[in-house]
Every structure is written in structure tokens, then in C-alpha cells.
Image (cartoon, rainbow, N blue to C red):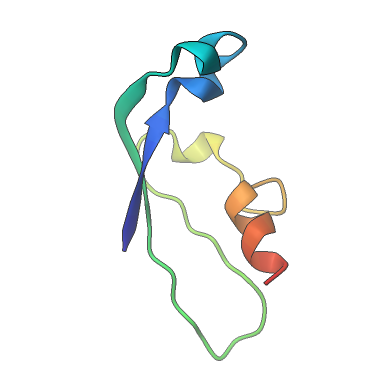
Length: 65
């Protein structure tokens, strides 16, 4: 499992120049399976707002590997 801190850079214009680390983390656990394809399951606060398909940056990153 890996954890990645959230940043203020995703809040909108100007927030990336100030640079503020948040105490919000994305925890990721990756597993190889025998089934082909890629599946992402998101849980926790705000999970309903995060896409689980090719609109997700993690999905796009791993789909080209």
C-alpha cells in the first residue's frame, strides 16, 4: 500500500504557486489478478466524486503500462 498526500494545487488557479500540503491522503493498493483489464474501487470520503474509469488519472496511467 502507498499513500500520496493531497495538495492545494488541485484547488484552482493560484493555489499551485502558494504550495500547501494537506492532511488528506490517497491510499492505493494494487494487485495483479488473472482477469484481464483494470478495475478501480474507491472508498472513503468523497469516493462518489472520483471516477473509476478512463477519466481517472490512475486508471489512465496503469492502462498504458
